[in-house]
Length: 288
Image 1 (cartoon, rainbow, N blue to C red):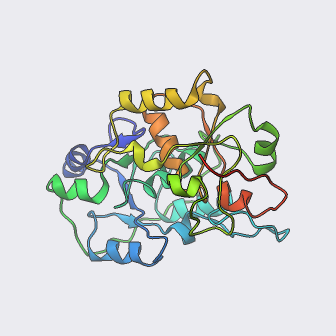
Image 2 (spheres, helix red, strand yellow):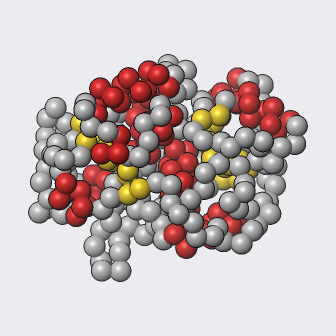
């Protein structure tokens, strides 16, 4: 595309770009935690022309246990070299504009958006409203699968997205603004459908990722998002914000929302609650 993509792109703008033959790689990340094959099946049943499918577990996460046998969370980041090879198989180079989408309000697309920035890739945006917005805008969906033209593994570049590990987070609790993207009942420890321990990291504030969206599944205006997040940050700068969720996926939605609002520099705790709560030595809080 003629301009660098950054955070969000409308279905209308993407349609216009594709209609005029502009080079853009479209990646579909539809997924369902309860049925891990459902997203790929939906993609095969109808997807944006030329789009490539990437699977959360296979392509956007690494092994849940490290070489030391310690649990790293349900969706730890893959090794950079492994993800570089995945991007190469998709034909993505540093010059490739990328649009990522899903059918879940951006919760999985935002993970890939963040991971591309983690690899140093700047020209990437999430399709605002996802598959539904594309269809509403008159976009076609097809069933034929066009194999990507592979490229070399993505080259090593300076990351555009920061991370923090469990030890560093534990050492800075109370000095950073920790935002938890899970639903309120999970944050408060009233229910826990996925991890063995209920509750949240002490000092965290709850910012449910779906609160970034309007009723139509699109992101709220940047000014509204900025107001929301500045209220959560208080006097702290955005650079002191750390994002987490259950396994490091929906936290990226909040990172995307802050970036879209012009609040840059916050970081991801990739292991999130699934890693944190697996160590009984780490503190747990419950309630609001």
